[in-house]
Length: 314
Ligand SMILES: Nc1nc2c(ncn2[C@@H]2O[C@H](COP(=O)(O)OP(=O)(O)O)[C@@H](O)[C@H]2O)c(=O)[nH]1
Ligand SMILES: [Mg+2]
Image (cartoon, rainbow, N blue to C red):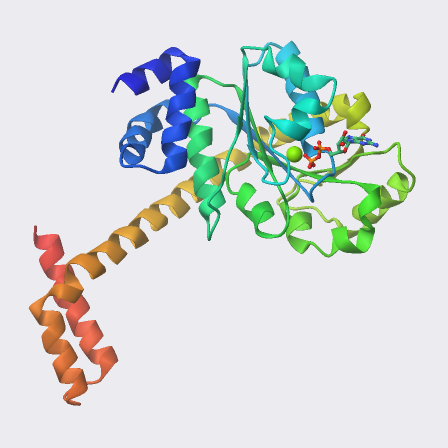
């Protein structure tokens, strides 16, 4: 596996190629990810989510640059169909992409998510693993929080930042229950606009502590870099908390359990599709049910018993 070696050596071209491979979901994907797994688990993953246009990419850029200054290696994954991180709109915006794009130690990739149930979680998780194995210390993942994505990102990120802005109208923002539950840190961006302070206090009112962590609410004007170092401090506080409270450990176990169940479900489905439903025992049971010699549940139970016994014998 040349690609894997290149990746572990820190070859950026290998990384770009590997991401394309997992994005396409081709046959090499699984093999690559399996080998990679043992080189992951080190990076800190920061998720940013929120409605379109709140300034997630702008804030993320500021945060990435601050962490870059601390000497950390940064990766950025943007799952944002409304405004791709590389290309048109964003590059057109004056200050920052030049800074980022010219910096070899910051890897940026806009991801096309196929979505679907759990799709984003899986795609983000795999891409994060590539960057992690590549040696990135901190990985930012941007998603558009229009419901499901907020929940999905919280299954991948070590800390979730929800980015809101005063313009949106608080009813719209608050009604997104998923957003409120997903956030460890809330940022009211565009504090240069009126009513930012009001939104901050409204968010504070509806938030309660979760697993011992009291979500923080901060104000930023990301476009001008105001308040962004406060967000860095909040990320560090949260990291400290997760480590001390051993929350990270239990989160990791929880995620491993979730992932194993996913794999098992898929294996059972395949077993069912490819073997069981084609077999003689299945057809016989179908006959018995049709002729009213047994009822479906009893037939199912019996069949399952037979299958499990024969599966575990070999
Ligand atoms: N007024 C104001 N505009 C901002 C601020 N931060 C970002 N923007 C602008 O808001 C727009 C959307 O920003 P972007 O980062 O692409 O938002 P995203 O869709 O959440 O990623 C852009 O035109 C930014 O220049 C801010 O602090 N104040
Ligand atoms: Mg964006």
